[in-house]
Structure formats: structure tokens, C-alpha cells
Image (cartoon, rainbow over all chains, first blue to last red):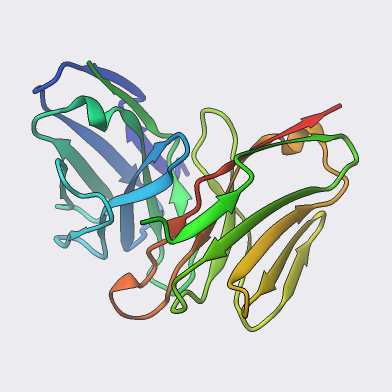
Length: 113
Length: 115
């Protein structure tokens, strides 16, 4: 089992460019999440999904969009990248149960110049 | 608004020593308090977790102490080893309502254990 796989691992964008971060999980988990990690800020929830076809806003959703067309995939889009979106992005998944652990991917390091 | 505050930001400990990381929360609806461990280049992974109905939970060298009245909890790593060098995050969540399953993380603590 691969667990949670994120692509790409690294990306450099120019301000105003767009891109999509891909997340795939092979654990048949219902819940999926996108977090961003910044020094001194911990991990902050961007968007999450409680099932195929559903998405919801997290703590810092502005400037991002998401889609969950298939249960195993959760896509994070940046329509017009800004330097403030320079960060490490983590995707995670979990089963649909209270207090279930999050299974994280290894992250995508994004730099916006 | 940081609902979970973690300290210290960084910690250096000698091999065999005790590492202590503290967290404080504000939201009284939180009822689940996990700690995650993250190695460089990897995603965080669950280390140990506690519910507020107990004051302490121990797994091997790792212990969570929980003080519900003070809204604080801490991670103790006994006999710290160089392999414990990592970033540690405390977190909290509330099981009910719209916050179901969503974790609020602390700022993280970079632990370095010198041999």
C-alpha cells in the first residue's frame, strides 16, 4: 500500500500562474484534507472533504479551490498564485470515525516568486 | 486566531534526558488531543493521543499529561534518543458538529537530541 501520495513534490510558480496539486489515497478513506505548513504557524487546514463529491472550507481557504470527483483523489487548485502561498502543502486522509488518526502524504513544497 | 498554543518552539536535549513540550488550548469543546511526530521531508504521523477523561497516557517512552481545568496538556519523552529528533505538533479536535474530525494544530516544536 502506498498510503497517501502527493504530486508534485516540488514546484516553483510565478505570481499569477495557476496549478493543481494532486493527492491520491489507496486506503478507502472517506475523509480527506489539505493543510499548509509554515514556520511558526504549525499546520493550518485549507479545505476538507467528508466524501466523494463534497468539499468544505477550513481555516485558511482564500485563494484555493478543491475538488473530490473520486473517493480516492482530492485536488487542490491555485487559480492565481501569490507569494503568500509559498508553503509546504500536505494532504491527509482518515476513516469516517471520531478521533481517527490522519494519514499524511509527504508534502509538496511550493514556491511562488 | 491560534486556538492551540505550543511551546517551546525549539528544544535541545542530551541523550538520555527528558524532553517536555507544552500545549494550551482555548476551545472547551475540544475532546481529543493527539500528538504528531514529523521527520524532515516526511508528513506528520500520529504518535500518541489522549481523551480528557484521563489525566495521563503512557506508551513506551512517551507520556501525555492532561490538565482539563487548566486547559493544558504536555508531551514527555523519557530517555530521549537521537532518533527522537523531529518536529512535534500537538493538536486538538472536537468530535461533534461541523468540527468533526478536523484537527487544530499547535505551532510545532523542533526537538534535537544530542548524542
